[in-house]
Length: 277
Image (cartoon, rainbow, N blue to C red; front, top):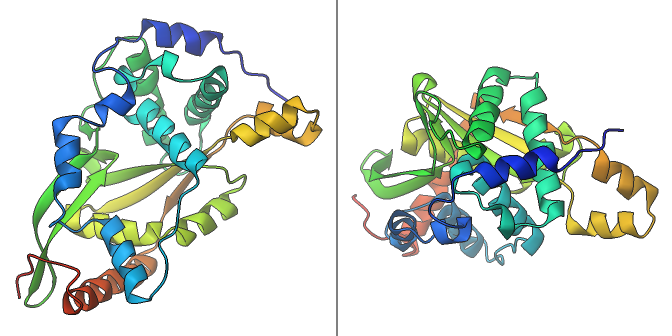
């Protein structure tokens, strides 16, 4: 069992340049606001909301701890120079340190990219803010007319965590409470991430869409550990794990057919505007 010392993360965070304030404030920047205000452009979230309405189903709520956890990891790994240590608890910092060390020690598929990413994060926390050559962070946004079939085009948008130009590759970061690779893959299908993969590849004209997941413990785990739960304590102190998933072309084609169906039926029901037919 490995106990992680908060010392080196605390030191690195104190050295980080305090630019643009906290991540929550960064989300309010003009381009971020503009993205969410462009309601005429279809996003992956819009596809899922319309699909639920077409089926007469309620929209799924995301647990608050999942939302907050995802936002924290997104800030740390995609905008580390803007990360502010005092916005987070020691428990949160422990999760981030475990994740960073997991990235640095990862040896699976795309390991060179994951380790290069980890090096960038650690250097950024120390004040060296130059991104790896050809890497674009901060959720690059695409807006253009997108043909889904012959004679039908819509306005579409995506927000990619990272674009690696030399490989024309999109990396999507996911934080997860899953403990195994199998469970993580199952959760991706549950939350329609394969649909996201097909949408991002087609709208962004990427050659590859790769999901990089890292697991973390919830505040409930900390509470259980403090109350004497031995298994919770063991999980809390265990190293984090990194899961890398690339969907098969068969899966992506199935999801491509799915989003095309959603858009066509959504057009018929009046959910989507600015359609070129």
